[in-house]
Image (cartoon, rainbow, N blue to C red; front, side, top):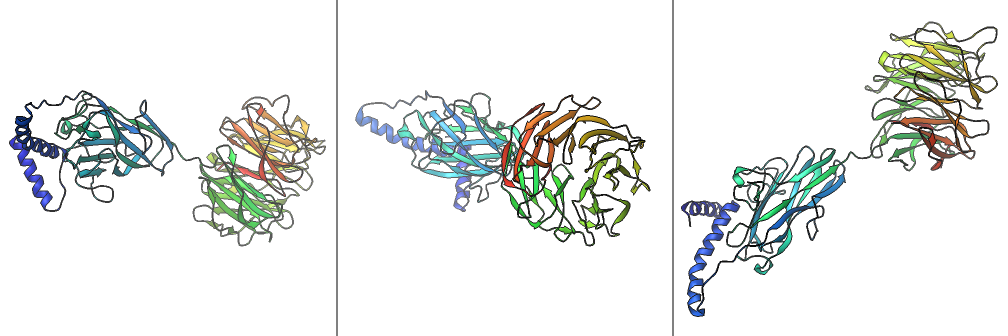
Length: 578
């Protein structure tokens, strides 16, 4: 036996006597070789009596060290293990399996993961080594309990994302009765998914410190399987890949005033509506939702005391509303309030007790209402106002039906409302509406749809410079206020309840003309539909004649069909993306 080997054993024994297990697998190999040398004279003596010689056993098998997707697997997969999809924060356990190997007496195996996506938490021996001894488990470069034990091998690439497991058979013999092929679970590793990745590998690191390896290619792979006599066994390696996908989050949120008057909300996740949850409040009017960020939306409602109440929704799985309501201390409204968010400020417009139009703000960061109270916008309306925001320009546009049914507009620019209202009114026949206008901004102008005095639908634009176009007939009619939304390509989508109570849609691409014909979704609807766009799909939520809730989606020019939402509402539903 080499002198260097004796020194390593001596050092390890001294450390072991101090109560600290500091064996490395290289030192264990030396120990195994020493045991073989001490046994050799006895074997030679025995040979005198049997009249034979000892022939060293040939190692003919090449096994496979593989990653398995299951901690209880009984064989290697046919190819690299495909694990997942896993969601960030989720724990999962994989196996490190040895298959078809020569009978072994111990191993020293390292597995590496990208710590940006996977964090190894613990490792545990499997049943491959029946009576393990002198075990070391090193996780993320540390052998400290409870994750590890023993000692990390000095010089090995132990560090973030790495797991090293070392052990030998305490009986001094090989597994599987000393006869190959020998297979079994060497150990398992439990990881926590950290961040999303379509495919992050579980592999075996290489290092010059691993020059003695069971793997011929690539060289210096940190996988070592030995027999009980310290002979290195030949092994192939097979890794794995883990898919970590972001947890499904709320793509839509709906709020309704139920048939009992209570407020309820439901999340839309992975193309399915969730259960309805109570919001702890009531409203005699339809709720209003306005988008405030990539994962938040604001809910604004009129309370049964006619005061104004607000809650923030944050998307998730399934997402949640703030626990408490933010009540405006002085506001009173007789109908549905409307809101729009610019930056961190929610702008609010309501009709006061006499129908007058008032304005205030809510600071979404400080969670406070405007200290100065309400601004009288010097106008009144018999219908809910329509408010559109252009965040890039810090601009608001308010369009209302006047008490004379004419169509009025007022803009908020440079932090202040215009002093006077402007109107599209023309002579000798004035422009009039009998319902709330539908309004959106495309960043350069307003698009406005109104219901005329004979319930016909009309469309106009208003430039930010204050120039109105003439109204164009959309060749359709509705008994209720229409819904107008705009997608990421600045295409308009108009949704209405027809006079036959079917739902209809008509689109206008940016810079183009309105569709010549309406697209019918069929169904029997009642009231103004809720609508929102996710990606390239238009989602619609509406009530049936009995108040039951139904949803549909439109991709291109094809509706998917109506599906129930397992709930009912007494008024038109609120629908928004978070």
